[in-house]
Amino acid sequence: MMEWFSFLLSLVPFLELRFSIPFAVIYNPGVSHATIFAICVILNLLVIPIAYVLLDIIVPPIRRRLKFVDRLFQMSLKRARKYQGLSLIGLALFVGAPLPATGAYTGVLIAYVAGFNRWRSSLAIAVGVVTAGVIMLLATVGILYIHGITPA
Image (cartoon, rainbow, N blue to C red; front, side, top):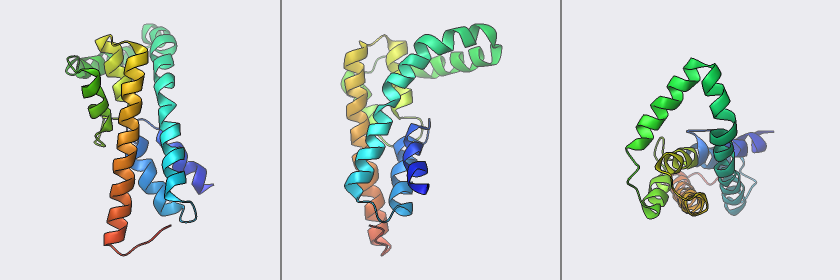
């Protein structure tokens, strides 16, 4: 049960790989790091089409009916507009930095607001997701190694 929970954290906005990889490494000592990396990254890559579907199909009718959701969406758009000038390489670097609010969901929102080509921006976001996954796995294993812990 804990295995699936730790992997499904990759789908949660603002947690994504920054939380799922360390959690999975610590709580799944019998699972190889390569498997953890692959599962977490693949699940986080699923966020890209999910976020586009949410932005295209689900959000507009909800925004029309619920003022709170519309205000939240407008606030998100306002924050995303700061990054409109990013190139696709910049978008990949932004998503790849494992910092708060820099994951795949935010990358899709920035690409959506900036009007980037979906195919190209999805590739840039995917590169960023893989980069963030590598950074988080190396950081997690490195920190555990420094503390003398060998979970897998």
